[in-house]
Image 1 (cartoon, rainbow, N blue to C red):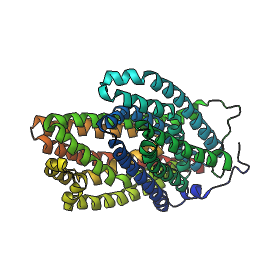
Image 2: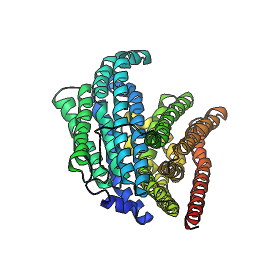
Image 3: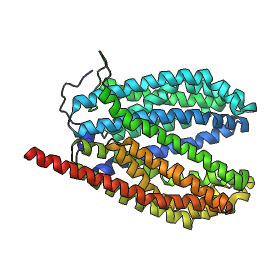
Image 4: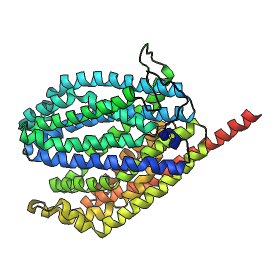
Length: 467
């Protein structure tokens, strides 16, 4: 399947190649909406499953590490392929963009085959080893369905990344929001109305992802109104294209896994100083912080695409404009959220502690929010710097930055203030906040140094071309 007009530009591509400030805004808003819908779905999904009892809720918890690993791999393939496509779009090299798009789909399918076989083969023994106990039967039922349909998760992630890479964020948003809404509708229907229990939650996820996959496949392979087109007949791997994808995709996957390791380590630290109630405070407080940071995630996806296109076009000054403008937006927005978190910590806490059993963690959660607010504006520096590095093909730089934030600063400082200095829960929150403040200037400085080096190199190449 090829495009009859290789020079055609879609509206999304025109946005990518246009004025960087406008591109950041136009590409960010739909993704913020989409990610908000997905996060809201995750919250409601947990509520529906909790109605089946603690064993069902525990079963989903036991399966989460496996699914998180799969999602990290899927996201890495999508991010790597999308960033590479954006760079080729910027270079006006449509044949290479088409080839990378095809490579991304093929690599995705290979990962699906390996992961599906591995997860289905070793899920039950792994769950037994993890001590699933009374939740084992629930966990196995849930796992078999989710792992058998993991290909839909991969294709959905990859297709949405390809759409984003060429600036088609509206259809990416439609797919993500549609999948989340459909899942929210199907959850109670399959779990309770049809009486499928925990298996119903898995089927709701698989059915919604499969329908989104069908829709995005139609857009990519049948309707063919995208900028990139696909040719699979006589497909052969090209090492440079595989490297172009994996040099960003592999570090992106490892980055996400490092965040899971950080969460596990901080949870362990919190449990050692605050017990189960401390863990409840941490998970709830971090969920609130994650919700408030959603706009940064949406803007970061735009920065990756815009930076990639500008880098491919050797218009490196656009990278700086897009990066600094996105940073101003996110620091401002997150600063407002931080102020609201300080002023309305009690009211926010009530939303998550309205039951009588939760009253005992109210005071600790208020303290948590009134310390962790500082993380919100500092998050913008790390996320946007990593996004810029991914866009220009420096995936390992993005990985190093994530490892600095998660494992070099956050975990040790949380332990230092919480355990070593014996400040308990308050010390853990201070350590996490200190990590954010320490990391932000490093992220910004490294990003700006790299952008300036790209600008200098582009000017040198321009002078050499004229000479």
